[in-house]
Amino acid sequence: MTRNYFVRTFGCQMNEHDSERIAGLLESDGMTNVDSVTTADVVVINTCCIRENADDKFYGTLSQLKNWKTEQEGRQILVAGCLAQKDRDAIRKRAPYVDVVIGTHNVHRAAELLEQTRDGRPVTEILEEAILDDHTMFPSALPMRREISYNAWVTIQIGCDNTCAYCIVPAVRGKEISRPASEILAEVESLARSGVTQISLIGQNVNSYGRDLSMSARAAGDTSVKPRPQFAELLRKVGQVAGVRRVRFVSPHPKDMREDTFLAMAETPNVVEHLHYPMQSGSDNVLALMHRGYTAERYMKQLVQARAMIDDLAVTTD
Image (cartoon, rainbow, N blue to C red; front, top):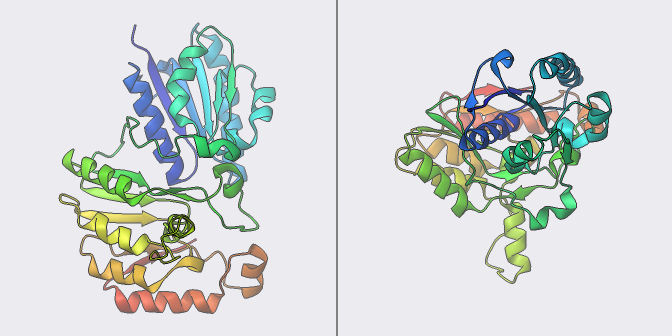
């Protein structure tokens, strides 16, 4: 008998992308997506721990599922994402009826672990950053279920090396690791052939993309590689892929923004004239306490430069 699944996602675009991967895996395993918990056999909750209200919403949702699960034999609950990575033991203690808890580094195991726990024995599987070197970090071959047919998220990096005082992302997403450009372009080309026209590049700090690749190449003896980010170059190459009409990206960091990124946006016709540019505060003292690595003056100078270089630029912030 075909089983139905329902996915509830809290948090950022990275979580939305991970949920698409989980959904694709479940459908490859023969399940069908439904838009209501009441008709589901499996409920997936992809969690966020950046904001306290996301925690509260998650635990509220989880408590409501206790009765749902007991109403019908065989129903399962899978919890994934950043809060699962951080609070695995607390989730188990508060909700022992959860079947599977996975973190941010092993979404590829979702369908397998759900099948493994159909006998009623729960599983918690959290991969720590220390063992990531031997793990598949960019499972681009995973099946995916996109909510918007013309748009596709494409991961260009995972993790974050910044130390913002208020942010837990580095602790739950791990160190910053860039995906090789050849893999990114191969995925974009495949998506374009399948009819996707808008590519949204995603990472925790996209404009530091490639710095680690450059440093690794130099450490291996290739001194021709400059120790700098490679995001502008990647942006141009993605924009040149046949069939791609629009290119977007999130999220940049003012500390790492370079003029070559603005130039690439200006000179690549299908890169959308939009920049989401987090400011966080207009106070230099607060920015320093936040460990943001830039001043309000530097931020404003970058915006003036961007507007001068990119026609009709739209800017959003938080």
